[in-house]
Amino acid sequence: MQVISELIKIPNNGNPSTEYIENELTKRNIYALRWAIVHVNDKIYTVSVANLKE
Image (cartoon, rainbow, N blue to C red):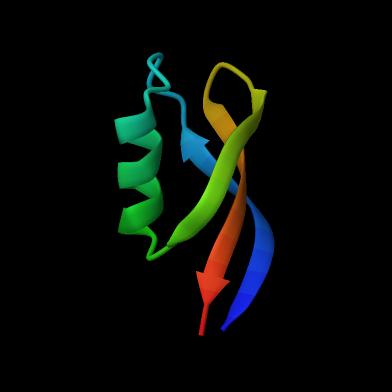
């Protein structure tokens, strides 16, 4: 297994809850060891993710 750092763009829904971010990552088959929102604009959250890949 490897840990890959990635930047993921997620639509800005105006409410960046933990549940929303984790559901969006799961939809993309991303199994994050950790994540953090690193940039926000009107339409997109940019999330830094440490993704566990086999």
